Image (cartoon, rainbow, N blue to C red; front, top):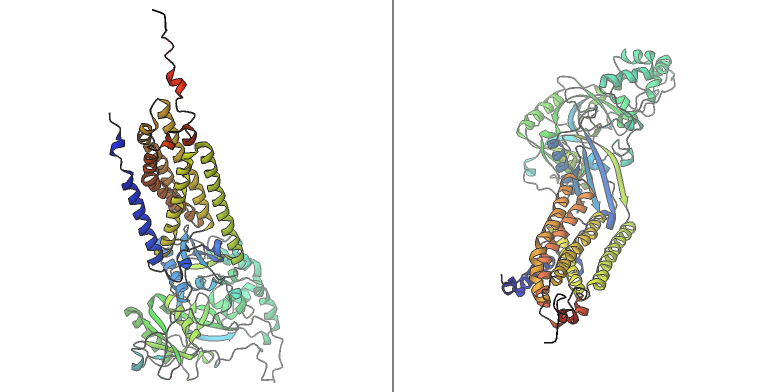
Length: 630
C-alpha cells in the first residue's frame, strides 16, 4: 500500500490555521465591546477572585417551613434580581442560580454592599388602618393631669406619610424616564439593619415543621400568664395606666424576629412590648399572605396595622422616576390591565374611607386614608390617596432624583416570586485579587516551562514542535478568552486558570502518544520519512479518543457543577478543543515538513538516535549465514 505521504499537503493545514488566527484577532481588536487602547482590547474579562470585588449568596425560600422554591420561580427571581442590579448602574455583574435554592451575585471591581438587591421579595399595597408607638419600651406611669404623658417615641400621624398619590397629569403622559429611573427603592434601612443582611440568631436554629409548632414554642417561652394577657387584648394596650400588665407582657420583649413572626398580627400590634426592632428582624415572607392583615413599621418607630393586600407587586407593569410640570421629581406608576382595576378599587376605598375604616392616626393631612407599599416586612412608602385613580398615577413627596429612582426601582422589580435571606457576602480586595492573578500566571508559566524543558531533553529537535504547539495553543486560548468575555460574558477565574494548567498535561499526552508511535515505526525498520505518516495514522485515533474523554468529562462537570467549578470545567474543555485544533492543523503538517529535512534524518538532532538503526548494524549479515572458501 502506498503511504499517504504523497497526499499530504501541509501548506493547506498551516494556511487554515493562519486564517483562524487572523479572524480571531480581528475579533479581539475590532469586535463589539472593544474600546480604549490596544492594551485594553487585549484584556480578558477577569473574575472577582483575580481583580477583587464582591460575591453575595442569597438563599431562597417560599414559606416559613423552609420548602425549596420551584425551578421556574427561582429562575424568574434570578432574572428580576439581575434587572435590579443593572438598574442600580452596577456593570459586569453576574447573577446565577446555584443548586435548588441559592442565587449568587458576583461583581468584579469595586467592593459594594449588595444585600439590598435581595431584600424585596414580596411587594404588597395595603391600606393603613391605625398607627401606634413601636419603640417597644415600657413607659413609666405618668400623672393623669399632665397631657404630655405620651411616650417620647410616639409617632406623629401627620409626619409619617411619605408623599401622596395622585392621577398622572396629561402633560406627563409623554414624559420619558430619566437616566437611573430604574434604580432602587425608597430610602431603606442600612444594610446592617436589614433582616437579610444580618440574620437573627434563630436563623441558624432548627425550625419546627409548622407555624403552629413554632407558635406553641413561643407560648412556652413567654409563659402561660403572658400569653393569656396578650391573647385577651382587643386593642393596643396602654402600659402607662396598668403597670401590672406591663410586667405580664414583658417576656414578649425578649423574643427575636423569627419568634415574633409566628404570632398573630393582632397580637404583634396590640402588645406594646413588641417593638419595631423585633418586627424589622422578622425573616422574609413573614407577612407575605395577601389575605391576612399584617403589621409593619415605618421609620423604625411607627408600628402600622395594615389591611389585607388588595394590590400585589405582580400588578405593577412599570414605574419610573420623572419630573412633573413643576420640575419636581415624582414616581410615575403604571399597572397591568387587571392590576389597574384592583388599584382603582383600592384608591376608592382609601379615598372614601370605606370597608375596614382607618382611624385618625392613619389619616393624612386631608383626612384621607393612606396606602402603604410594603416590601417584605417594612413600609417603604405610605402616600396619602388624593382621589379615585383610574389611570396612571404619580407618587409625590419632595423626592430627590436618587430617592425617586430608588422607589421606582423597588416598584418595578419588587415582585419576586420567592423570598431571600443573605447567607454570605465575600469581599475580595483588588490587592488580594492581583496576588491571586500573579500566582495563577506563575503556576501556568512554571507548568509550561517544565513541559518544554522535558520535551527538549527527551526529544531534542522534536521538542521544538512541542514548544511551538504550546505557544500557538496559548495564543489561540488567549484570543478566545478575550472574545468570549465580550460576547457571552465568560469570566476567567482562579479555577479557570487551574483548568488551563491541567490542559497542559492533556497536550503533553498527545505529544507522547504521537512521538512514541513514531519511534515504534522506526524500530520496525522504516525510514523517518515514511514513519511519520504511518505513525500519524496509528496515533490519530488514540489522540482523538483521549481528548474526547477529557472534553466529555469537562462537559459533564460543567453541567452538574455550580459556582467557580463551572469556570474550571469550561476552561479545561476550551483548552482541550484548541489543543486538538493545533494537533491537526500544525503538529502533523510541521512533522511532515520536518521529515524531509537533513536535520530530522540525523539521529542526534532529531531525538530518534536510540531507535534509528546504525550503519554497523545495517552491514552485519544475518547470524544463520556463513562465509567459506570455495
